[in-house]
Length: 138
Image 1: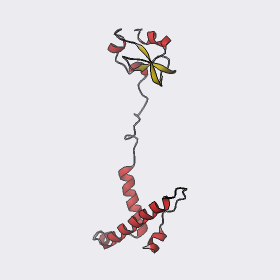
Image 2 (image 1 turned 180 degrees about the vertical axis):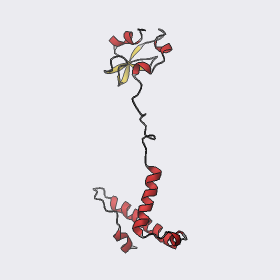
Image 3 (image 1 turned 90 degrees about the horizontal axis):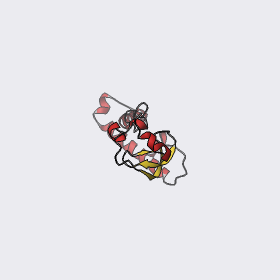
């Protein structure tokens, strides 16, 4: 086992004390899986040496767990402008729009600069000077 592990050892430098233990466990698991594969029926019709077996296992995991652009959290293309994220019926109704201090920085829905105030009904960041313009129909 040690001879086979030494042949294709995971060899990455790290300052973490636990890395050699983790790498050794991964190497032993791969070695044992290869030995089980050699005793199976699959080995008779598709023989693989240890390196080919390791590559096949890696390809399988990459194919299964690789994140594609469609899986990523960001939407494709440009996001909607802040002015269009609120329904016009809500934005221009003139009822209960109050500006309040928000806890985090956002982009202003009117001028796109950083701001900490927010319209409580629309949930859009706005400067005090931009508040009236944002809620006025043009």
